[in-house]
Amino acid sequence: MTIEISYATEADIDDVASLFEQYRSFYGKAPTHDARTFLEERVAGGQSLVLVARDGYRVVGFAQAYRAFDSIRLAHEWILTDLFVDGAARGRRVGGGLVDALVTSARDNGSHAVIVETEADNGYAHRLYESRGFEQARDTGRSVRYALHLRDHH
Image 1 (tube, rainbow, N blue to C red):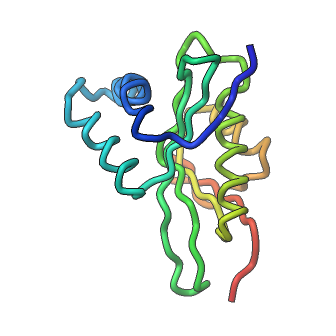
Image 2: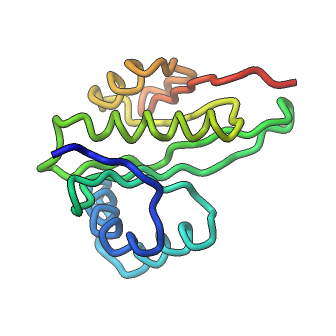
Image 3: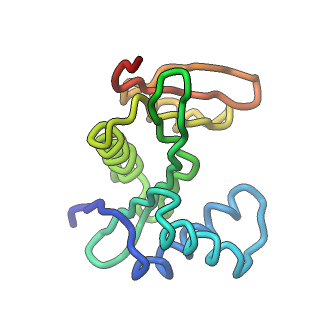
């Protein structure tokens, strides 16, 4: 079945919250109702952009990004903070589809860049971002920050 990507709505919260908990678990966090509430508040308040990947009716991945402002460039950028694909859907280019959709949305909304930071030892993520034109902006030894510049501003 084809993977479809769309903006998350409040109706998607329960499905996304399950993946959000798996994502948090990957980083050693225990499940909590606060995680669902956190996600729901971001979507309901328009505080973040949440994209969902569906395989039919089942949500199999999500990405969450926040808008940040750059006073020097007089522009905004999107910071991709969360990207997760259900284990059963890995290898089907779901993560890449989510990144592509985020970049398209950022470009369409006049963003000057998309920024993401990932762990230094996450080779899959490095290959994913580099394959989409992201360039390393900083390497701390523990994490690597990537930037994809979309346009120049002032």
